[in-house]
Amino acid sequence: MPPIFVITGQLSAGKSTIAGALLEHFTFGYHIDVDGIREMVTSGRASPLEWNDETTRQFDLAIEASAALARVYGTAGFAVAIEGGLDPAAIEQALAGVGMADRLIGIVLHPRLEVALQRNRDRRTKHFDTSILEGVMREIDGDLASQPDRPGWHVLDNSDEPIEATVQRVLSIAR
Image 1 (cartoon, rainbow, N blue to C red):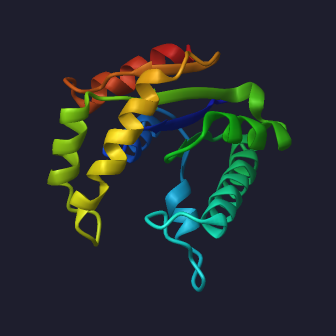
Image 2 (cartoon, helix red, strand yellow; image 1 turned 30 degrees about the vertical axis):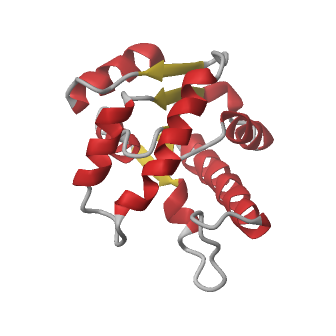
Image 3 (cartoon, rainbow, N blue to C red; image 1 turned 90 degrees about the horizontal axis):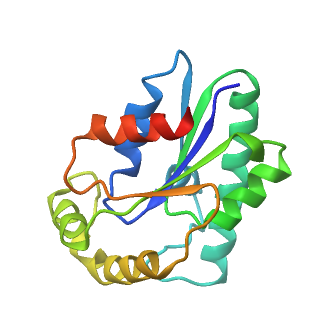
């Protein structure tokens, strides 16, 4: 059965871009954007910019829904890429809960901070001033740098390489 890639990491690390490009290498690919699922909440959506208990609940629901979608499409023979700012333990637990943990390939994209900050400044896909994310990005960078290696997860610095080079590194991990 094809893998279930989970791609997390720094903001502006290229998670969505890598997920889409990666899935082009499979006959059937399904891209799950955890933020996109969370943003489907049409009323009462909690903002991650003002974190509270409801924000946590909505992110947990999006992770649970992502795992359910991964089961549906993964069981049907699709390679799946789940991407977003994810806690590895939470997505591992959610995939285990739907019987898909054995297909998980964890990828943490961690470009150098100055590269991620520049990518964030250059983004045109957000409908808000992305400079408000810079403080959070600095915190995430510190968190990523201080986390110990987690079994089954691969930290990739994709600062200085084209998208396809990162995709090839991920594919080599999956083999």
